[in-house]
Length: 107
Length: 119
Image 1 (cartoon, rainbow over the protein chains, first blue to last red):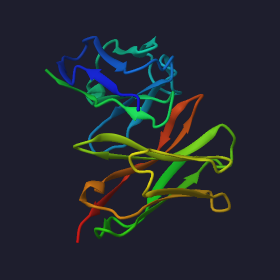
Image 2 (cartoon, rainbow over the protein chains, first blue to last red):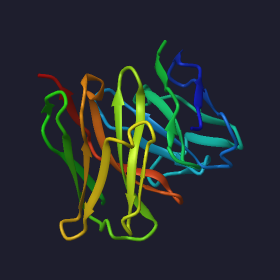
Image 3 (tube, chains in turn cyan, purple):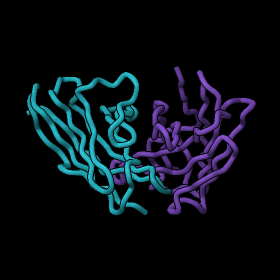
């Protein structure tokens, strides 16, 4: 299985901050990388696929980059609705695997 | 707008079979390029992909669960199902159904359903 790691595991930030979350795959997944946002009691919401393409309706403050094994999710200006847990997932090979998540909370 | 809705018992006894159905509305599960997945989430293990079934009936399962899992689809009812046999307390989780594709990743999720394994 491809192992996914994320850093940091949690972070505290203020409204307006720029936040960067990193995701690393244990082997090359080219760009088969997705990012999700999950709020308490809710299902994950898809933000980005193919490492850098926003899902329809996702605001442009979210951006993704990377290829191969190293990827980043950037939130350009954190808003109150962005406080959540963020996960990456590889879908290059079965079984598809998720990172452990990064919890973003209010400083 | 595509919607997915999980249904099934919220409580299952140890050693019995967990059965869930995901009903899809606003789109057909017969559409090419898409496959239909089950994913579960626990506080301890995080998000775990269980398996998926494609539009033509091909299935893929997580090797960690393969011996106990069956995913099937009923195109006439536009739903797909999960069966997990011989459950234990470690199978207690939120279970989600989702749509996946190589093109768009996992783009739609159901709201999730909590299944507790307990006598």
